[in-house]
Each structure stands twice: as C-alpha cells, then as structure tokens.
Image 1 (spheres, rainbow, N blue to C red):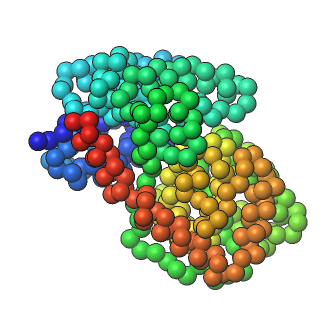
Image 2 (image 1 turned 30 degrees about the horizontal axis):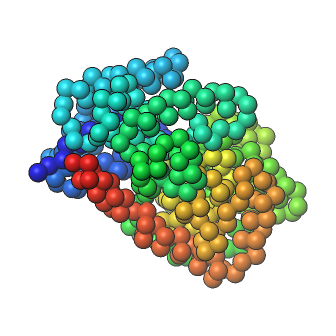
Image 3 (image 1 turned 120 degrees about the vertical axis):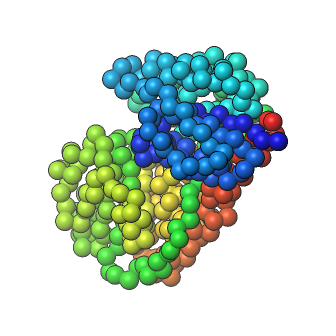
Length: 367
C-alpha cells in the first residue's frame, strides 16, 4: 500500500536560492525513487520544477511577499498551505521551516517539522537576538504540535532538547550527491588555493576571512596563498572593493558547473561561519575530496575533525589563521589523505540515497 506524502516548502532550488530550498529539491528527487511513496510537493512556483515522475505531483501556492513583514507573510503562506492540506488525506506531512504553521495542531499525528539550522536559536548581537524572539516563539509552538522534529545533528540536537520533548527528535542529516568524476591531481603547485562559498553576510564569517587574508598578506603570504570567494550578498560590494588583492578572486554568483570545477581544482575549503545547520557547501566540498577548515557550530562537528581538517571556534580570526598556516605546512600526501577521508565520510553517511532511506523508514513508521 502506498504512503501519501505532503512535502511543503517555501521554495525549490534554483527557482529560489538557499540551503533549505536546495535540500527540498534534492530530497524530493531522492524520495521519488521509492515507488510506494505518492509525493505531492507544495511550493510557490508557477512553473513546473521537477522532471516528470509517476508518483510525484506539484501544487503551486501563492508565494510570500518579501516586501512585507516576513513573519506575517510566513503565517499567511502557511494558511494557504493549510487550505490545500485540509482537503486531502495525507499519511505524512513534511514541513520545511515554517511552511506548516497555521493550525499545525490539526496534523499533529502526521507532522514532521524540519527547522534546519535553527538560526533564531543561535542569534548573535542584540538586534539579531531581539528579532529572533518572535521566531523562537513560533517554532516552539510548532514543535509542540509536531509528531517529529528533525535535527541535523551535533549542537542542533542539544538546542532542540531544550525546547521540545526528546522522544520527538529524529536525526536526519543533510546530504549531497557524490561527483561522477574526481580529480586526484591536487597540490601540484607552490600556491595553495583556498575556496569560500557562501553569501557575503556577517553571519557567514566573511568579515573574519577578510581580516585573516589581510593579515596574511601583510605577513608576506600573498604569493603563497590564493583565495577564491564565491557568492554574493549585502557585503559583496564592500569587500570586493576594499580588499581588491591580487591573490583574491571574487566570483560573485557562480554557476553549478563553475563551482564543480572550483571544488576539484582548489586545495582546501574554508568557512568561518558564525552559525549553521549542516552546511551543504561543506558536504559538497568534502564529496570533492577537499580538506575542510570550518567553525564548530551547528552540526559541522558531525562532518569535520582532525582526520579531514580543522574545527575552529566561532569568531576567532587567530584560530582561522593558525589553521591555514598549519595546513600549509602539511606534506602533499597528508593534505591528500585529509581530502580522501572527507570523501569517505560523505560516501558512508551523507549521500542522498542514505538520507532518503532514513526518511523513508520514518514515513513507514508513521503510516
């Protein structure tokens, strides 16, 4: 007997860009391979998003107006989702973020909520913490009504246990697809190539990275280290203008093909973010055999340790610089070993095939 799944999200990559939106696309594409699942995806796009599958249906819901109050718009969007759900008899309702909020209690015996990175619970700065209060209140109310709340792992599980019952928390990590081809010819030049991929925003630690690049160049490393910075965001113009160094390339918004090429040509991935869930960019870098330098936030400790890179503390430029210098002093064989461990970790635990199986098992349990 088939299991009827309602998959509710505020957007699908690439029609809407973001970690949750990419997660929605890749998870659905992995789940449709289970032929006893009948999946209906509720999203805000007027056009068809997925390829044609016999067990997949798409329903367009009027999108959020980003020019209005975001939290109010999220509730209005969830109300439109509710009006779709209430007329159908689904076995499982899977909510990305706040997609199922309005009258969530109606679905309490079948509702799975994935809050992803729990950003409101990791806010830094007075302004951000004040803004987060309302979001935390909303999420707490949804957690109370949900049958299960998804944790990506690590510190996120610790946060969730403070706000919801432990028996509701299920570990369903993020994932990525393994690349078809891998290039093992790294570390063959004297100039180490570093890669940062993210929005140019303070919470992603771009200011920390730029501070460290500035210090390294002042110490005479400009001919030893080259930094590729991919992504756009509110701080892009400021940093690309203020730090127009010869050893820094600002890629701006980058296509998937160009990003794949970068993953397979640079030497190490660096990400001094201030808070995260389980970053897709780190998983993608690992799947391309890259060593990782990343902040110990969210679920990053599930991905990175001394066997494949460096975990640094949040907002610590000196630790980032030390990690970069330590990595630079490793032998080529040691660097390659770190990268191979990264790849193996993804292959063993964080492919979409493995994570989709975990979701499927949970769906069957609810059914």
